[in-house]
Image (cartoon, rainbow, N blue to C red; front, side):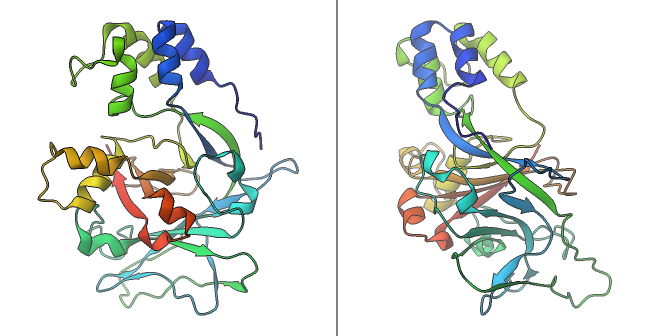
Length: 298
């Protein structure tokens, strides 16, 4: 796992394709993240920091998460906080213990129920569990669903390693727009300045096949995920033009993104991704019950 991420292709890309002042302004938006890399067959040099799929190990007395009225959630992934480069991240991630991510993925009801940020009644369909270091844990069997026609199966287990990398905000994120427009004045919120077109094309070419990250910027499939969460928190009746959405969005940071992954047989909608966000103060207090979730797909 490489923890030296002082220089990255993102820095070089900006300085190659943008005027120097705009390049440095955009570079100032970059944030470090622990990128989780699937290694189906880890070698001796691979430090395993977590895994996709398989079965979770939970402490005694901690129940498998259930969405009341719908059924058990599916275990998606877990990460060992002590094995992550948490000290190099800009979020107050625990330095020990394990994070386990669960999601109601539609196996049980053929995707009839949907977890959405602006539907509070669905929030129980995605959970983050924090398992303190030293807790006595045991692997749990997949819950049995009382319907012989339903195949409720765990995802294929895939070990994960991690490397520290810089991440960039979405090209349509308001901070990106301000950074890229000359003078920091956005003249058209529906387009990018001509000076940035070649840069954004080159940035698009850097995207990866599977994007699993802890911390840093989310890589949204659609619109910036912080605004989906803000809209959900403020209520679905809130206008998207309400300035409170901008303010609320700034309070949320990415905790984890889990992408569609062929090795683990994970498909979120149509090649989408799962996102868990949290307020930094809640993360510092280990209030993972306050994390919010959204899913985006093509």
